[in-house]
Image 1 (cartoon, one colour):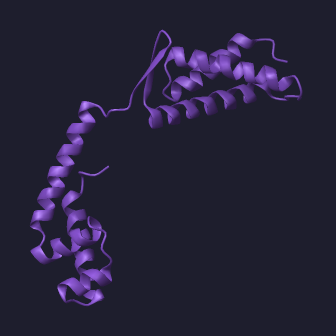
Image 2 (cartoon, helix red, strand yellow):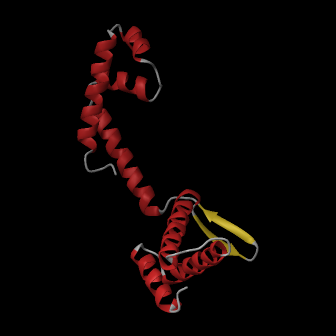
Length: 161
């Protein structure tokens, strides 16, 4: 068993800080990882407890990050939990700018290409059905969609994450 736990904890906390965790979060994660180590050692031999602690803490950190990305940030107020899943102002503004840019790019497409592209991508029509509606071959519809995708991709370059 390790005798110098404070140094081990400090190293694990430093690693968590490098992974973007705050000092408070790192402290919580180290404590939780240590509890898991202690519970695991009740029935198993851990040859490298520091490595176990480090791996567990980093995995817990990753799990928390993923959970927050999916469910949003949680704020505890007495016994009630408030979850804010709304996007931030910056994200909303960037999204609106991207939509405006996409709209401009769509307007630059030739009318027939735009109508075929929107029929396929927005209305969900199959190439065969679009071909029948426009009196074209399926191959022509495929080419219109490909042309639209290429023009939209070029027009959106730098605007899409």
